[in-house]
Amino acid sequence: MEIFHNRNLQKNVIFATCKNKCMAEIKFFKKIIQNPVYLAITGVIGAVLLFFLVLYLAVPSYRFDESEPFYGEFVFNPYQNVDSSQFKNPLYIDFRSESIENHGISAYEYGFAMTGTRFLCLGYREVRKMDYPFLQSIHYKQYNLDKLNKTARLVAPAHPSKGFKKGEFANLDHYRVIEALSENDNSLYYWDIALSNGHRANIIANGEKAGFTTACLSDDDPENIYKSLETGNSYGVRFKGRLNEVPVLECVTLKNDTISVCVSGKAKEIRFIGQNAVTKETVENSNQAFYFIKNDDSYIRTEIEFENGNTLYLNPIVRHQYQYFFDPDHAFVMKGRTYLMWAVYIIVVLAYFLKINKKGLRK
Image (tube, rainbow, N blue to C red; front, side, top):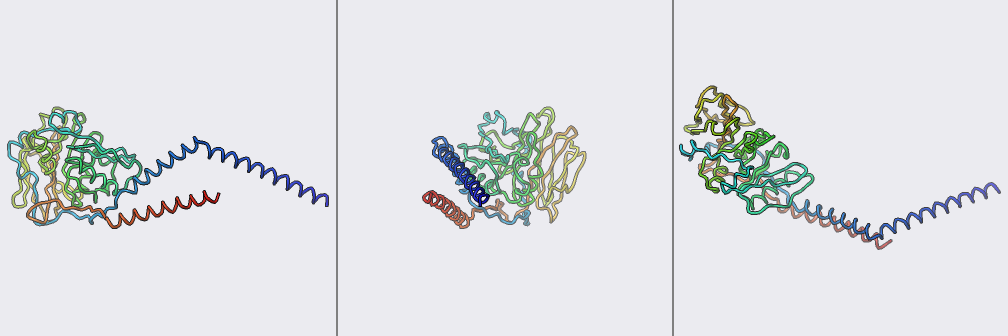
């Protein structure tokens, strides 16, 4: 009996010790919770989390048309209305250089997301300050494009290989220019992915210090410069040495499904590139080349490389269905799904806060 009594006494002592310790910890945590500094910190953290929650959930859901190559019996040549004087006197512009102000052009790079997603905005009226700093799906990128298009004349995905997935360019829409060449970035393949999936985009090349610039076949009026980029009356240039020593494009004609390209100097190679970035034909050591567009050619773009490495990157000639050419829309906001999604999110958030509030009342 004495042994049993001692054991019970030990248990009671241990229980009392644990109880006192737990009560002390509870009092300690209550002091922390009631501390103004703690309340301020948790309030700030909660506000920040709520801000980002609302920020991300406010983006609509998009429906993207099933990707397909360009098709149709008609062929669009972006250089068809360019005259000989414009070909011979291109306007070289680096749209990331401070010198663009001399042409009356405004530009800024948008984006600060950790994903590296950036857009080059030309002819902007105001700077967009909102972005999605963490993970971004194609819906966020498309939404940013749509918002930027409302405040800028042209919006180009910037250095795509650093902030976009290759597959996204099969669906991403509502842009007419792409920064396919720039300092420390070569995104020509991303350009071909877009073209191969029926998205007409024209090249911009930037970074004169690294040997890249864009040749615009227009006068020095800002609106005409924007139009040359938008319609494709321009081409990208990679140069080594002096820019004024680079041969210029002299003609791009289309007659009876035959493309004719000519330049002011003898080219090492003139490459005709088509669907899925496949080189369809190469002409060597000539200042002129011809290519017959085949039935399975959805688009053809041309690269003209010279012996010293200077290269011209022409905008694509594409197939289309109708006699009058236009760029179809491939991305649409799904309003019904978006509203339903928002309603579900609001209900979930309200239910969570009600649950928290009930627990607080019980305590």
